[in-house]
Image (tube, rainbow, N blue to C red; front, top):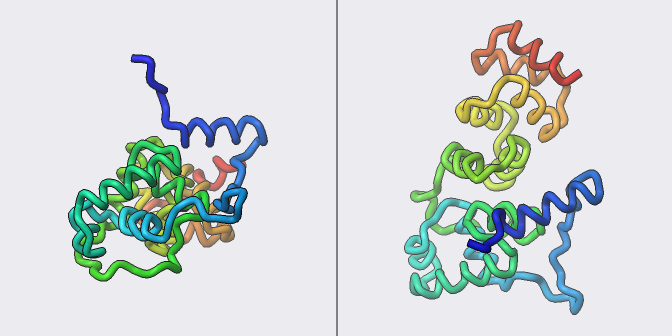
Length: 197
């Protein structure tokens, strides 16, 4: 139909990877004139999106109309060059527009759990490491909790081990102990470690 087969954000991520051998960390989202990419209100909306709120829930929390929320989301998508809520959260985090130090939403009753967010990210094509990065940012998950979510998403032992090693920068022994706590047997845990060599 003439459209792009992938989103601009994912395309930029892939291009950065191949040009620089790694993903460029563009955590500075200031424009040349020193202004930030997103307005404070757009950042608030993005913060609510990262917690799994619907447009109606965001509107109620911010005391604005759902139409206004939709307008903010459209501008966020355009500015971050994304096409979905998951991409907006990931790209917002990557660009430094999403921070856990910002005001927490007033009500936590409708917050999505880490597994729901992780499942959506996986369905969106994000890697285990990218999923773990978002979970750490949004939910402040520890090693065991993060590994448990990956296990629930049916990642194999080697993927879980590699992601834990990269995301938490802990010793192999700690990861093996956590894998055993999650129900992996000794052989599976050791094989996951050996697969990294």
